[in-house]
Image 1: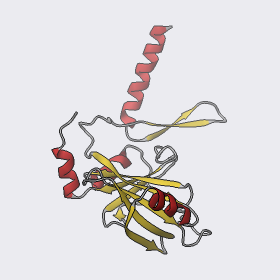
Image 2 (image 1 turned 30 degrees about the vertical axis):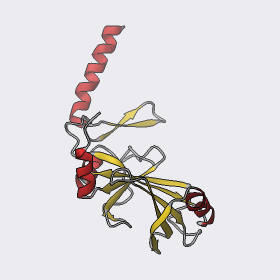
Image 3 (image 1 turned 90 degrees about the vertical axis):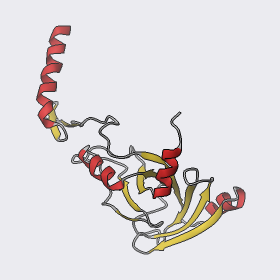
Image 4 (image 1 turned 180 degrees about the vertical axis):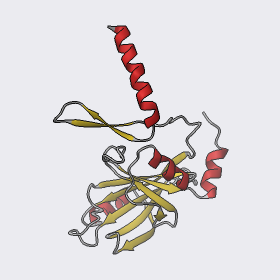
Length: 202
């Protein structure tokens, strides 16, 4: 009955309290196990970083021809730079849309230098999104304690900002991923943080 269920839930809470921030195994049967991650508080009062806005949207294809036709030819976006890396297997044009430090978003048009090598920047075609954060180091460390899976660590990205990537999928060790989306977290420069702070909350 209800009293029995309430007591069982309270016992479960007491059991899980020491396990906060760790993965525990819940045995559903002898032949099947499921994994439960016990989260720390996700309240904004304890989160040591802020997501300030969209920094980039990255799209990919085997060649840049069709993407150039639509993004530059049809939409009129201007090229502001480029980036090429053998290590990252990418030939990239950097376009921009919008105005102002918070309203400007990069559109990164990417093609692989070798379609047979990894990383495959053209798969999927909507490759990843980038988000400005005000403290990427604290963000990375905090999210790792919450069970978020990262694809590598913090490094300097193509635009010169410190970046890290949340893996599209979680695993048993770090069960929280990007729900199928590769998410780049980008250290916001001082002018972006200032612009965000100057905007009044709605």
